[in-house]
Structures are given as C-alpha cells and as structure tokens.
Length: 104
Picture: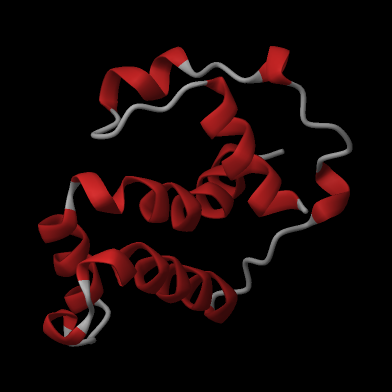
C-alpha cells in the first residue's frame, strides 16, 4: 500500500482517537474546514473531525480500498513509533481497533 494512501486512510480515525487529549487543536482543524467548532460538544469533537476528514478524502478521490488489506496482524503493527508522538496512549490493541475501523 502506498504510504500516502495509508496516511490518508488512517488520519480521520487517528484524529478521532486523539481528540480527547487535544480538544483545542481538534477545534482548530474543524475551523480550517470552515465549520464553527464552538457549537460542537467536547465529547463529539473526534467524530466531527473524522467526518470532515473522510468527506475531504472522498472529495479528492481517496476512498478506502479494502482489497489492499487482506489480513491485519498485531505482529505487523509497529506501535512504538506512534507511542513516541501520540498525545494519548496507544497500545497494540488500540492500534488494531483503529485499523479494524478503517478496513472493515
């Protein structure tokens, strides 16, 4: 799978996951998309940013191609690099849950 597509596929779901740890930054992203973030409740920020990013991906022709991923294995997930930068803890199980949301 091309690196850019992998990033585009994952970004909406990763932003949804980290939203509770960085609500102000998520609000800013929502506003970049021309939406008023002040009317979005804090617990709904992740879902809103995910929706906006998925719509953006679709508008530029990026939709998940489920044929690219046949099997998601915990052994293939290199979570350590995410843990170094993530504003919210992400273990292998959390990473797998995100991948399952993307490719199921």
